[in-house]
Length: 157
Image 1 (cartoon, rainbow, N blue to C red):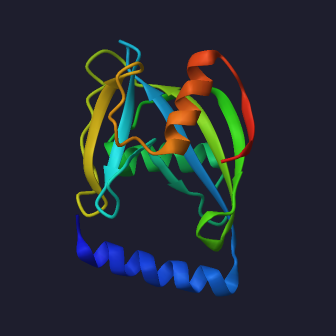
Image 2: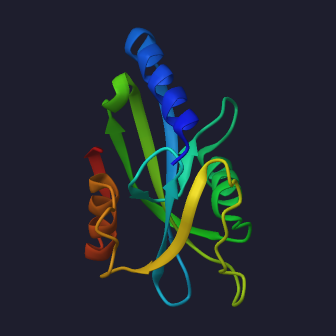
């Protein structure tokens, strides 16, 4: 894990404690043709997460998830099926809203994952929905369980 990412993260959290920003994020339950889910492990954390990130000023959530999938797992042809839910998080002293999309990898052969940003993404892998890594983040595991149950979610992250 890159120590400089941890230092930058600690500095950002200190600023957030003072400024308490309102942010909007996006993540994707990205599935391949075999119904495996894409998860990423960032260089600055030990857990596995759904791919995604922040929405930039002037950017729609749909454009943001397309950009994030390209930036994190080099997936440029995913099709958005629906919104799984919208969640609220007050972690890290932010007022964060996260939109979770359900998306499918593109055409056969177009579902190869690769780390697009080597500075940010340590690993990117497909996992069977019933065989998630033990180090999957708790919120990620909850979103996957909601997807598997056919539920739409909202509320706390």
